Image 1 (cartoon, rainbow, N blue to C red):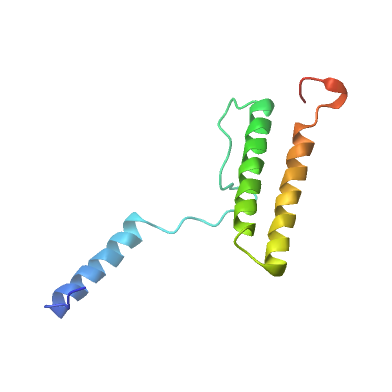
Image 2 (image 1 turned 180 degrees about the vertical axis):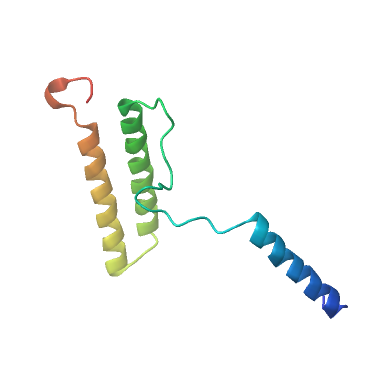
Length: 103
């Protein structure tokens, strides 16, 4: 990075950037029970949501497994335990009682 040639210009550009950030990029409000971080699109069925939850758990478990292979000791065991819990949750969601096609 090159040293600054004009301190006054640099200070002005920094002040301008902060001013633009303040007005154009306000801090988002903190989530509360009434304001959710994200929501499902209208019209998403329970079956679609279930399928997506299963896919998310599958990805999370795969990420945990890959992470665990690069760890040692208790951190590795903890990550494998997390992967196991995700696999159990996925199995519960995939369970179809009495051979029914779905929930």
